[in-house]
Image (cartoon, rainbow, N blue to C red; front, top):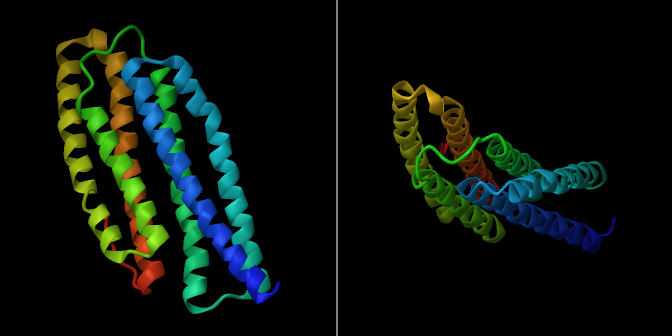
Length: 216
């Protein structure tokens, strides 16, 4: 592999990560839209689309293995290449969690037990985190990555507030337990999406600075 081809391969790898990030963000957005509107068709499209994101992860893993085996990248390039694999794993997990949200949507019976206000807000923060951290990745922006990670605190706070509310509602009315339990799973999935976004922030900081920071 010539030096020019090597640089082109690194560029393709970077673009694949960015595209995978967009697909994962779309999966989160659509899964919550499906939940809010109880749109089973949209939920099923999220579930079906997860395979495309899985393919991205497999292709990125193959590219990383090839680069390491054939080029033995050093210093900044090695940080970039290995971190791309880690980011791809986090993006794939975020998409899996969006798929889990869609699957829970298909199991809800009848109407929602309460207007969905806080859950879409959690999802909006998670989407925003993912969008901004992918910008930080594209631009090697350490400060942006660090600031994005702080948004996870708001997701955590909302998680505990909604969790307490749902548990209280279930205690007062046993007939809502089935639907409430699905919403409990949803808020847990969103909380974990925020954690994975923080992981990506840490990878961006590592790529740009060589420092490993605990941002979660």
